Image (cartoon, rainbow, N blue to C red; front, side, top):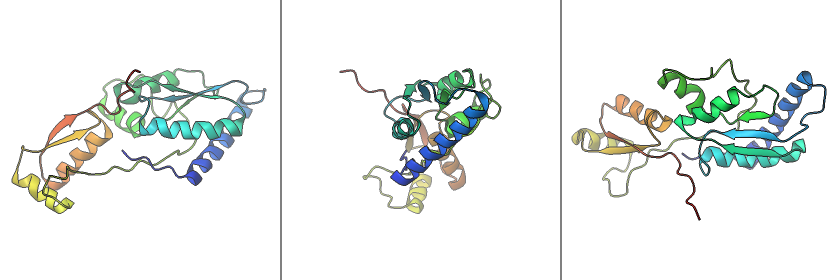
Length: 200
C-alpha cells in the first residue's frame, strides 16, 4: 500500500484536527485542553503506512497543541484490537485512533462479533491520508497491462497466485473484486501486512 500524504495536506489535517479537538474538549471540560499527553492509537504494527502517517501528523499536532502525542501501536485482528481499546477509553479527547477502512468498514463485515460499534463508539475528526492500491506483477510475468494480465489469468486458471496483507484485509478484498469483475481465478496467499522491526 502506498500512502499519499503531501506536506500541505499533512499540515492541513493537523490544523483541522487541532481545531476540532480544541472545540470538542472545550465543551466537555472546564480546564484548558490538552492538559496532559494525548494517546494516538495505531491499530497496526510499527513501520507500516498507517504508522508512518500517524507519526507525521503526531509531530505537527504536538507542536500546534503544545502537548506530547504518544503513539501506541497495538496490531492484530485486522486492526480491531487497538480499535477496541480506544472504543472503551473515556471519551475525553485523550485517546485518539487512526481509524482505517479495515477497522471501520471491513471489520464489521467480516467479523461476526466486534467489541465496538464503528459508528456509535467513535466521532470522526479529520481525514488524515488517502492510500491508493497498486496492481503489480513480477517482471517475469508476460503481461504489460491489465488486459494482458486478465488474458493470461484466463489461459491459466488456478495456476497463478496473488499475495495480500491477510485474510479479510482490504488488499485481499480488492483482489477478490478484481477476480469477480474480470472472470478470472488466482490462488490467494495471505502474508503479514507489516512485520514488526527485527530485534537488534
